[in-house]
Amino acid sequence: DSGVTQTPKHLITATGQRVTLRCSPRSGDLSVYWYQQSLDQGLQFLIQYYNGEERAKGNILERFSAQQFPDLHSELNLSSLELGDSALYFCASSERDTETQYFGPGTRLLVL
Amino acid sequence: EDQVTQSPEALRLQEGESSSLNCSYTVSGLRGLFWYRQDPGKGPEFLFTLYSAGEEKEKERLKATLTKKESFLHITAPKPEDSATYLCAVGGGDDYKLSFGAGTTVTVRA
Image (tube, rainbow over all chains, first blue to last red; front, side, top):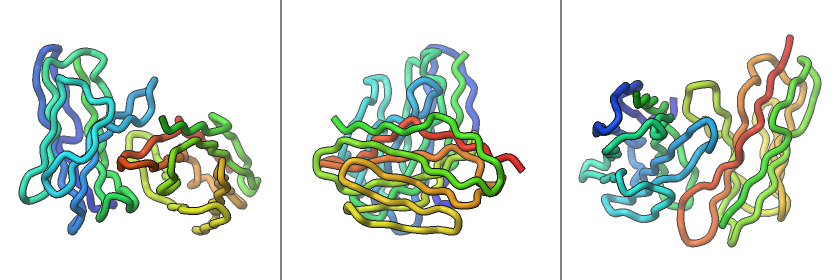
């Protein structure tokens, strides 16, 4: 158990809908990272927050957004969902930007 | 752009048959090279961080090494419970993302 929690574990929704994925980092970690893992693309970095502020952005679609709250938990919002958005979404956290990232168990999203 | 290439894609081993996984990388200003283990449907589990060429780290039957261009993960006398996908990632430059390779799926038969 890495200490990173993610909810929900599974999510099934329809195209065009909007969903919110939640992540609680390890106690004491200030950085939260979001990654997408699909069969054909592997693990892809989406976005990083550090102590409430956006720090780095990867290949995140404009339909996706995230935020980190004062209690350091983070939410990833996915809107106007498409079939291709079906994937595993992982959250990771680290104590400092350059330290090791610890991953949560993931949320499996299925868009029908 | 950081690039990570892992080989082989898949590795089938007999229990006790030692082998090595390769991770080749290109990165501007290496901050760290990371090895993770991932079981199907689960999140990546941290194994090692290597920071500079020549560094080595060990954990049970696993040993990771680092050169300026590649890293190796050596599996000594593997057991069936070592079956998993092993992911290599690099962090570099001014941002803090990790760039992952596609992974090597290891299957160890009893």
